[in-house]
Length: 95
Image 1 (cartoon, rainbow, N blue to C red):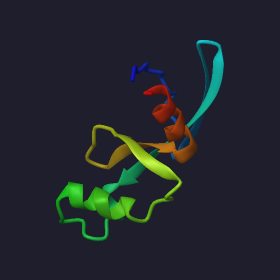
Image 2: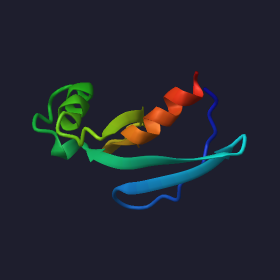
Image 3: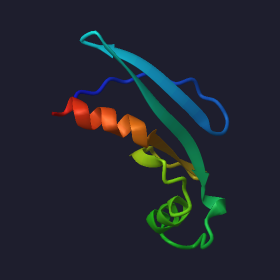
């Protein structure tokens, strides 16, 4: 599958992103969400950060799947999710 990069304005909090693309004349909608997960919200702040991310994601909405984990800072890690219906578009395009 090919990738393109679309710059997203830096906004505070959760970002709901809807992208409409036309590929070879076929329109498709893709849904993404970018959330910042703060280290201070981890139930065990002295644990390894990977364990912290896993713990925070275990309570996440199952309609969304992790798509990309961004570069962490000292305060948070940005995580991009893709909605289930958008994942079906990815599966169809790889056939």
